[in-house]
Each structure stands twice: as C-alpha cells, then as structure tokens.
Image 1 (cartoon, rainbow, N blue to C red):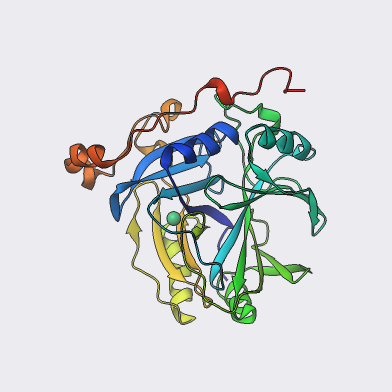
Image 2: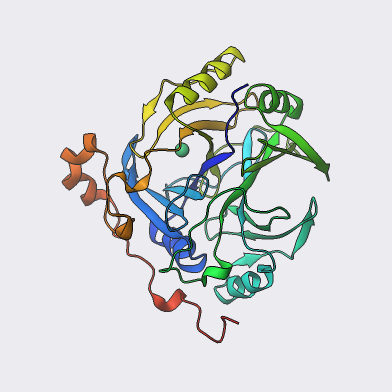
Length: 324
Ligand code: ZN
C-alpha cells in the first residue's frame, strides 16, 4: 500500500503578521523561508518558518488573519502543534520563553517523552517535544537564528486532534493513509506512518460542539508524498474511502491536494519538491515578498494592502550569558 511519508507542513491562523514573525523567527529562532501570500486571498501573507533549508516536515506556516475571532474549540479541529527540540533543551526553552513573557506550562511527560506546553502570542497551543527516538528527518541549523544551533527547533513533531468519532478517523488514518497506532495514554491515541517523522494524537473531543477556525487555530495538516504519481495514488485511495479530494493544485513550491478526514479536520497531500529555493536564492530565503507567477501582474496592488513587516532584530538573540 502506498502510504504518506509523515508530516509535510502545518498551517495555522495568526493575528498581526509582525507579532507572528517576532515570535516564530525572533523568540523561537526559526528561519522565515518564504514570505508570500495566501494564493486564494492574496491580500493576506503566507509566512513559512522552517529549518535553514526548509526541509519538508520542518515547516510551520501561517495566514495572519488578524480580523478573525478566536477559534471555537470543539471536534473536527487540530488543537495543538508539537515542535521537535533537542533532548535536554526544555529547561533552556522554558527560561527563554519566560524572558519574553510567553505563557508556558510545566514540563510534562507524554508517552515517555518530555514536553513543554506553551501558548503563542495569538493563542495557538504549541508543545515543544524532546523525542525519545533518533531523528527521522534531515535538519540543517540556521546560522542566522537567534537561538544557538544546539537548541534550535528541529521541525514539526506532530499535532493533536479532537474528534467526535475517533474510530472513524482512526480507520481512515490506518487504512487510507497508512498510519499505525502505537500508543494510548490519557485518552489520546498516537498514530504515525512507519519510519516517517510526524505523529498525530487523536482523542474523543471533550466538547460536544463542532470546532471552528479562528486566530490561534490550526488551519490544516499536510502529509508528504514523494511526487505527483504518489500523490495521485494516495488521492485515489482518499476518494475510494469516501472523502472528496480537490484536483491537484500547483502551490509552486509543491503540489497540493486537499480533503477533510472523516471527522472534519482539513488535510493536504503535498509533494516534496520542487521546494523553497525554486524561486529565490537559498541564502536569501524569506527576505523579499515572493509571488507565484500568476500573481506577479498584481504585485503593486498586493504590496499596497499587505502590512509592512521586518525580520526580527538582534533584541531576540541569546546573549552569551544565556547561552550556557
Ligand atoms: Zn498547506
């Protein structure tokens, strides 16, 4: 069976773009690898944060829709994003986050792994996670980061989903996308594609209502496929399972297919290539506004409506005294 290769990216909804940039590039030290626009709503940025090279599976992306209300928590929603950090780094992270006034929880254990929960400035729940197993994905440290290479975020670790009917989602994950369930704890069941980075934790929703997107919620989860033939193969399996996938959409840095899983969470199948350096120099990713070719003709209007943003300054860099 042709399964997906774990997580490709996760996209969430943010508030003001500059605050989002300050937190993810400044405080968390991720690299802004693409500064673009939402292709369906080009008056809104699409900001991509990743490792230095933007490896598939390392990127968390945002639509800053500052006018939206907060999300309605409920079933059919991804309620938390987990980011992978190096073993033994959580105490440093906790201290750093506190210095910038970020709301953090206490370090907890989830299925044998240490996790530091926090809430980003716009309400998105993030779980910094020290994985128990060796890395399953390539990582390139970002030398321009505000965080030393030894503690930098390694990319996406996974996400948590609330579902009304977890069995229906489980059957879809296992039979259609090729995930295996490998642990259950505190009501959460964890699924992963064998040998691939990116887990998904599913539980019965504690809220009887349907969840809805808002500022601080996850918008969709994208799963890796090798190339277009693999994408079409998985797409036909998704269709055979009763979901209604979109046609292949060219997102320029990858090709995408979207569908909702049985519980209503929006999923995407995204190809590994061509990648973020297809349209700008790898040394200068994220510095300029990049538009897909079909929007270039509207560049002046688009730049006029987008808020001005600038890369975080050195005020976010760890000083040498904090670096030990
Ligand atoms: Zn996407």
